[in-house]
Image (cartoon, rainbow, N blue to C red; front, side, top):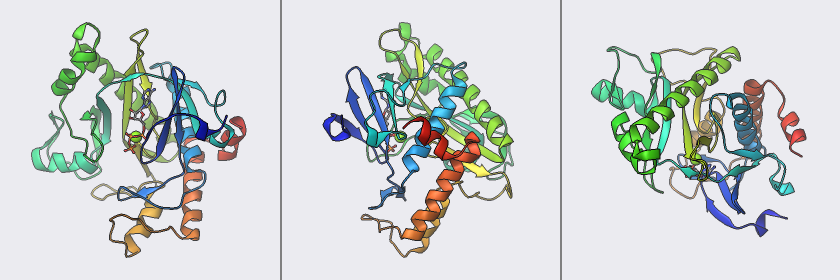
Length: 299
Ligand code: ATP
Ligand code: MG
């Protein structure tokens, strides 16, 4: 079987989703976008890094929450090995489960405007990127294509979940999602810290198993695409720390003279190479093994 023989259900900016009977095949591509525009050339190995980091985390967190993983090898065409994962098809919940341990990005903007994030009152006088007293659950809507996710408070999340929740109890389901998300963040943060990396915030997507009703972690887990990872070395509050891997190609894009509207320019070979090295390093930093070990296991 080759990829082009499988029915393609959807194609995001980065991932392709194929139907595999009652399962799905998620394939992380090597595509790279900056400023939300995809470049014409790829970063070889990037997809494997994203899938391998997710695998690492699904493995280490299955005692906290069940996940959608079925296999990284069985049923996966050769050209997608390392980048692909066969998963249970879930009914995805209509919210994104964001957890923030540091105040940055849109959370920082909301805090500056209102002193709150997702309706949660935060201490006065926080500086950009500062660690919060405790990690907070700041859900958002799942944006339709071409729109942006919108921060919502817990009560709104519960309302959105009610139609799909067991017994219509959106509050109970939102509570379970919040508890699982914060527990996952804590594990991710603690581990990253031991590896010299700060996990500033992250986003999870959960679904319900259509047969059992079980709450299951889907999508990707604690990858550099779904999270903000900062090097702990040189971290300073009051600044916007550089992201671990993508910053390099983004810096190039910023200084390239491109006006950030489509089409995005071809990334020069040496920038591709530098970006590849940084992604591979992200894999190694987080998992403690070289990327080649993951490629070997999934061959
Ligand atoms: P982008 O990442 O480009 O902004 P996106 O997040 O919609 O857009 P992808 O990340 O490429 O797209 O695709 C993943 C999609 O698959 C998401 O819509 C996600 O909710 C869905 N998904 C992930 N895991 C499962 C699963 N186990 N069952 C059903 N759908 C899933
Ligand atoms: Mg996505």
